[in-house]
Amino acid sequence: MSRGRIIGLGLVLAAVGGVVAAEIATSGGQAPRPAPALPTEVLSGHRVDLESLRGKPALINFWASWCGPCKQEAPELRRFSQQISHRASLVGVDWNDRPDNARAFIAQSDWRYPVLRDSSGEVGNSYGLNGLPTTFVLDSSGRIVQKLQGPQTGSSLSRAVASAG
Image (cartoon, rainbow, N blue to C red):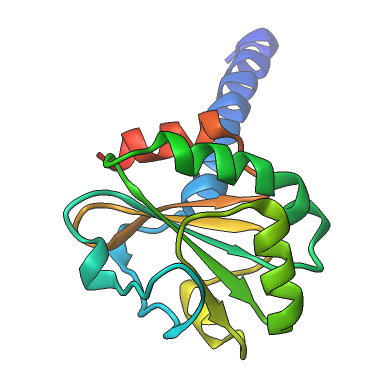
């Protein structure tokens, strides 16, 4: 094989590898799996569990009041929650945070969707949380089909809901 063909093949493989790496980073590189149970403590809104979320896609957003990127994402989540209507559900999960700080953050962010509290961090750990904010996308059967790490935009959240269909 000529040197030019080897270099060309190397560039193609590198490009394909980049696409695969990006997909793994977004989806966690895993096949869909059943979502672990949600926390039972309610900080804001009403109590939700996985059974109540079935039938349409759901987004489970882990955050904390002390998280800088979570503060950046908060207005996007508020706007998105007002736009999703009956297409999907959005549930916030405050992770390993003080309840008074979390409630102040929720009020300041003007969130109107259910927010639960994972005081020990165990629920986040069972989801595979490895940084904040992280949003887990569930399909209508309650399986995790995508993991979005870092602050999201309304557009990225809408795409996630559409792909979870």
